[in-house]
Image 1 (cartoon, rainbow, N blue to C red):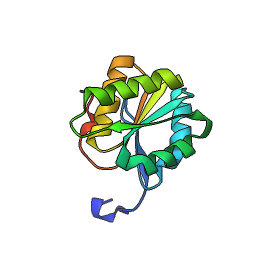
Image 2 (cartoon, rainbow, N blue to C red):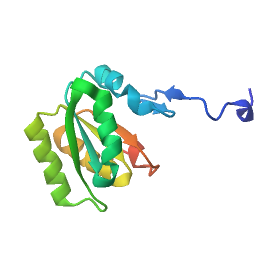
Image 3 (cartoon, rainbow, N blue to C red):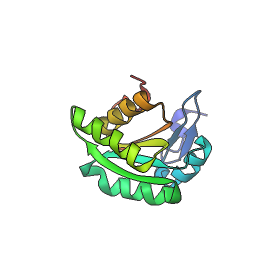
Image 4 (tube, helix red, strand yellow):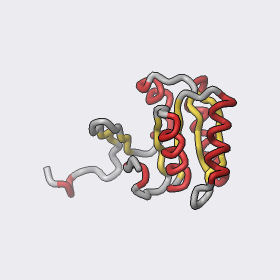
Length: 135
C-alpha cells in the first residue's frame, strides 16, 4: 500500500517501547483506560491557565481517577510553577501526572516526574517535540 493511499483522518495507536502514543481526535476520552493500563488511581492534570477547559475535560474523562488540576504552568517554566505542582501532588495524594498543553506544561510535567518518579501521560495540544524527549 502506498502512503498516499492511507486515510489521513484515520485514528491509530503506535506502541513503541517504552512509550505509548495514541493519535487521533478524541484521544482525551481514553484517559481512564490509559490510567488503568498504568495502574494509577489519582492522576493530577498539569496545564497552563489557558488550557483549563481541556484540562477540565480530561478530569471528567478520568472520572474517579482524577486528582484535580494544577494550572500553574507558564512560559519558561518558573520555580514557582514547579513548587505549585509539587504542593498540589502532596495536597491531593496524586500517584501520577497528566501534562496537557504545549511545551511549558509538558516541561513542567517532566520536571515533576523527574523529581517524583510518578507515572506520566503527556497530552500535547501543540507539537513541540517535548512530548517525546525525556530531558
